[in-house]
Length: 327
Image: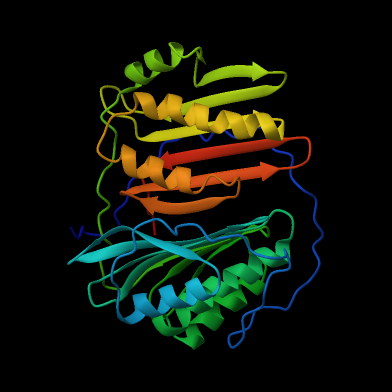
């Protein structure tokens, strides 16, 4: 349903990141952003954009145009929900060092109501801005207008860490940390869409008991050591008396051990998890078990699969969480 003002749900989740050995990179300049042409990042060939197996409903007008342009730039798109009142859509691109997303809400006629863009690349600052500009132009040229897109581009070029950018479409909040560029905003005079709450039927004590029965040691998370510097970990969040709202499953160690461990840790967690969405989530994750990184909306949840691999060390993490949307 449509809520008054900006609506969203705060994800109260402590992200548990395993030690990941990042690959080094050079800030080699690429073609600068332009309102008429879109530069390409220099990370090399793109892996598959996230979201191929997530649900993608109908769209028309601005939303359809934005989706098609983002897909042509290698983004995979999926819907958190898509109803007669409107939709919440995410287009994601995880390849090499790039992590980027364009999340937007739109009415049934395709009119875009609110946006949240983010582009991150710790290895190459210029590439973070190039991919951000791809998102900005794909969505903004038809939604905000080319002259308003240029206002945002100029603000990014100014190097300010944080600033508000006014436009005829609505006010934007820009955050530019160099390796990460974020933009959020809502159309003037319009309300954003409420996000349905999500939780599993399983509560924290039930999941802890099940994992302890599988040999995990549980404190703030549940961990099992499977060899020399090889670990499996399950982290979760739930309010007292409520179902699990955030679930992370991860493994780290030698590449061969991680490849064997991820199906095990996933089965350990899913084996204790109850709820109507479990089968769809498990199916999506199994279909994207190639060690690469993906993101998608699946069965009303946000799913991120992160992989980091080298010859001697590997880590993989799967995160399932309910969506938050602040603009």
